[in-house]
Length: 445
Ligand SMILES: *Cc1c(COP(=O)(O)O)cnc(C)c1O
Image 1 (cartoon, rainbow, N blue to C red):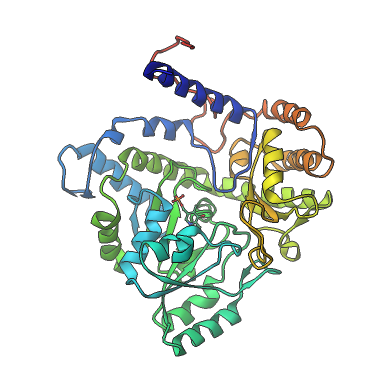
Image 2 (cartoon, rainbow, N blue to C red):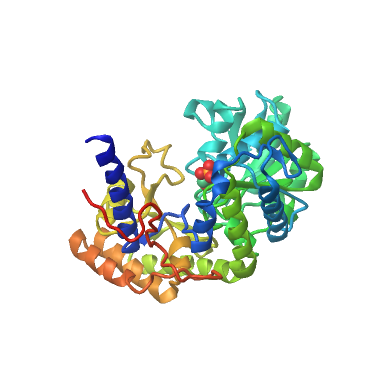
């Protein structure tokens, strides 16, 4: 294909993607969908500009309006997360974490974090797994003792581990809470003062749960003893892809320097504009949304358990967040089941579960799947729809019904959910493809 054909092909692929998502059930726990307002902000000219530095202290000219927006962004983040300081410039959650490592530790230091099967994220990971903390900042990682039954960090065993690390000359410099498989709050309240007494900096990675925390649900890390909180701006928080850091004022200078010049030059100003709009929406609608997300996750978990699925965290009511984890090993492996569900327009991801690495399982074929409800909740779905979704999943995974047949029913089910909820304006459909280049002319190849 020549350049022009490829050019049209790309737009054709993007339009197909929109059409597919419009008729699918999107259940990836780390994803959400932006409001039409956020979409408008991110196609603005802001995305063409540079604004290195802090509002009012830029290295570039042309930032008069950009500065005002970024100031509003930081003010809204402070309000939403009840923090003394906010920096909305991190270009992703990984960059936000890297900035915290840079601000509060040196290469060769030790960090405590959750292992991947216990929910930890690659950005907390060891050098030998190419994890950001180890590979990029040279940290040594030790894992929290984790209780599979309670699906959270084991408090007493962690205190013991810290004491041992100290006596072995391996005192952690940073303790990282939070994760990607994240069903129940982490014990920040129970551990932070012990950590502070031992001079350990505490960060909470709220990448997944920021939108729940914004709504006053799940947990409140800064009140529970966390020194800072890093997050992605696009998971349960419904902004454009990016990162945010909130913290106590005494850490502001260190964090600001670690973001610029430490880890960013361009800080994607269109996304700063989008984050600002998303935070305004969160301030207005975040509470109602977070409550419904958690109700939906619980209902979906219960419905799947009723169909015979092994849903993790049963003892504690399956989940208190936006996601649930299902051990599907009775019916196949997580990777194969992910593919089968995708054929039926149900989009979720396979998941390593606690114990998987020890039993020799690979991340391509782990024993679990992870299911998240942030996006379907944004589309207005409630408890009764969760029961229908559970039934679609059962038809594929347990009954082995023909994927094309279920896929058709899924698309039909989706027809009535085309407008976003929890927004100031929703006249544009959620997945509507917006053409800018040639208005109202359909060109095909
Ligand atoms: C998704 C995630 C991140 C990474 O965020 P990006 O914005 O994708 O860079 C960091 N930490 C946790 C726990 C995550 O789940």
